[in-house]
Length: 317
Image (tube, rainbow, N blue to C red; front, top):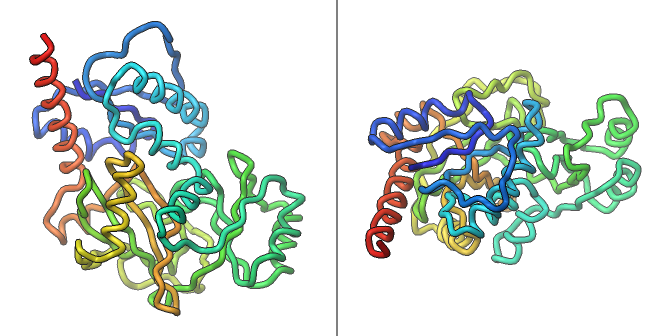
């Protein structure tokens, strides 16, 4: 059995379709809340973690804590989890992401993590302008705003529109301004490059690629006019590109089965990696253009793991 942990119903149809087309046995677990029997063995099968770090924006913040404990319990009992506890710890903490990326030799923008609203103005003076704010635990680019001068930032911090992060940690980050007015998202499944996608930033940084995401009127960090081109489009990348290879090694080292990793190319030509999304979604327009099925690849991975578990069970029976 494939056990799917999720909290956002809107993101489930593509995965359900892919699993059903392959005839795979599935049990869904709505994980906005739950209870753990610490003495009970987990249900047989493999587990697919689809809990989102933005669950709190849908009133499911408690589910993040529930899933964190559940994943640890499952793994202690020997269950195979796709995107398990280690990758989930990175998913919900950009601080941990940046530390891990830097340790792997992958370039990231200069970033300061701040706990306490009263410290933000002081810490911001350690950065050159422009810089952006973002939430340590966000998803979809929530909480991202651009500031080109300290006066505007001070007014934001002191004003009524300040966005308090869910976990209390605000990031102040060097703004890498892309001449292309876009960022690149690299999708990796089971240690292989699936595709790369360009996301236009003209409309803001809430760049969830899922068809179900309602972007709305986002804060615009790079201009006041909306892009005339599609927000998402395929971007050719060589699987042997050193950055792609670094991402694949990173995923292997951190037990990440599925990831969407985002980078931006600055005016200096350097590529700065700034976000890792383990609960990745795919854009149907990009998939059609490339002739591939992202959720199908995830379903295939689950099918292979389930078959491998069945073979192990036969050997030990």
